Every structure is written in C-alpha cells, then in structure tokens.
Length: 302
Ligand SMILES: Nc1ncnc2c1ncn2[C@@H]1O[C@H](COP(=O)(O)OP(=O)(O)OP(=O)(O)O)[C@@H](O)[C@H]1O
Ligand SMILES: [Mg+2]
Image (cartoon, rainbow, N blue to C red; front, top):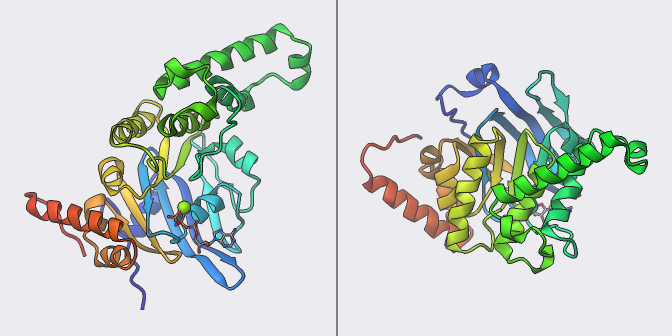
C-alpha cells in the first residue's frame, strides 16, 4: 500500500505544478546499488525561487538524491530536467558533475570538502575562476582582458566571503577555521560558480545555536538577495520549518509526503517515519507538532 501524498502549496497537485515556473523536475528517479533500491521513483517539482527542503531519517536516500541531481550518481531509471531561467530544458541524468555545475547547479557536501591547506580566499577563487570568460592562452600571456577578468573574479570572491560573514578570515587557512566557518566557506565557494540552484547537504550539521541562526539568515539572503533557488537537506527541524517554503520527505528511498512545513509536520506517515528511527528527530517532530497544536489558526492536512 502506498502512503504517498503530494500536497502542492497551492493545494492543486501535479496539474498545477506543470503550469508553474519550475527550475528542476524529476520523475520516476530510481537508483539501485546491487539489490538495494536507494531511490524509488522519486518525483520532484522544484519551483524557481523557492527554498525546498528534503528531509527524512538517516539512510532515507537524501544525499543519494543530491548525487543523482549533480551527476555523481546515475540512476538506472527516470528523468532529471533542469530548466534554466533563459529558457529551454537540460537533462541532467548521467551528466558529468562539472557540466552540471556549469549549467547552473552548485552544491555543498555533508562531509565538508575544502582545500584545507589553502586560504579561504583561494578556495573561493578556484571556484570563481571556473566562470572566467578569458581562455587559458590569454591568461598565460597575461593579456589585459585576462588580467581584468581575474581581477573581477578576485573582487567577486571577496564580496562573497563578506556575504557569508568571513570578511575577517580571507587569508586564514581553510583547515584552521572552526566548523561553522568551514560550512560558510563551502557555501561561498558554491556561490562563486554563480548557480541558479544551490543544493545544501546538512549545512547545520556540527554548528552551534548561534551559527544555526546565522545560517538561517544566510539561506534566506541567498534566496532573496541573490535570487537563487535553494534545495536543502537538513536534520535540524527548526531550521527546516523556519526557512523552507515547502518540504519533501523521503523514507527508504520513497517520497512519502510533500507540502508546506505545517502540512508535512502533521502528516502521519512523516511522524511515523521519524518515530521509527532516531529518538532525537522523533522528539523534534513531536515538539514541533505540540507547538503547532497550541498555536492558533493552523491549517490541517491529511
Ligand atoms: N555508493 C553507494 N554504494 C552503495 N550503497 C550506497 C551508496 N551510496 C548510498 N548508499 C546507500 O543508500 C542508502 C541511502 O544513503 P544516503 O546517504 O543517500 O542517505 P541519507 O538520507 O543522506 O542519510 P543521512 O541522513 O544519514 O545522511 C543507504 O542505505 C546507503 O548505504
Ligand atoms: Mg546524507
């Protein structure tokens, strides 16, 4: 028996979503490793400009879904389409990760991946330089156009580091930064490739409460000030419920619910999925539901 439900935020399901301005669309994405089905016919419609969270218990397939979107994994079945803002449609299924990045998707990793021996600025510059218009020959010859492009990419990298709050740490070695700063640096590096969609894999993991609040603000600013659509995997329910426009829930590779934060947090399949796994996650869901029930004027969906 399927427990799948799909609640459009507008309450109108797939037909309405088809008419919407989408930036990413997956259908029937199925990924297997040997006999293990990690993703099972996953369907997603991500609207341009939204913050869409992907939640689910450990091992639900969240990172595998990101890996499938960004070319690290190639699902055996299904379709993955990126719809750039200047029109057209690109299939991402099986694309090389660097091409996916060039098309307009950038990501951070659950386990931070930085060049630990390079400075914060150097880490961002490497990413920014993938967007340099000047070719390798003009760079080698030090032509004025190449020098100008490089100067611009330096300036942009510094601006981005300021944007994420690392203005005082430009020249610090990445490996010596505290965990929260390393997460911010990863975000700056992803932004340096000028994405239309930013995929964040557990950006709050390992951060302290103050850093979590800063992260919440940063995700909102990336979305509103830069106009970047954000796909967010996160276990911190408070962060998810506060920043996400919509939430999609995976469990054992299947999408079991989708909707606004208030819709999914009350959905029985979601509560059950969490209750069956991590006690901490289950407690977080229970608390949020309790708060929700005591708050006036909340919608209820089933
Ligand atoms: N390369 C791989 N080879 C074999 N199995 C894999 C591979 N990548 C992921 N898996 C399996 O796929 C399942 C989903 O893993 P995934 O990392 O996507 O979960 P997740 O939802 O991100 O979990 P978490 O919240 O713990 O990060 C797990 O059972 C995992 O062991
Ligand atoms: Mg993961």
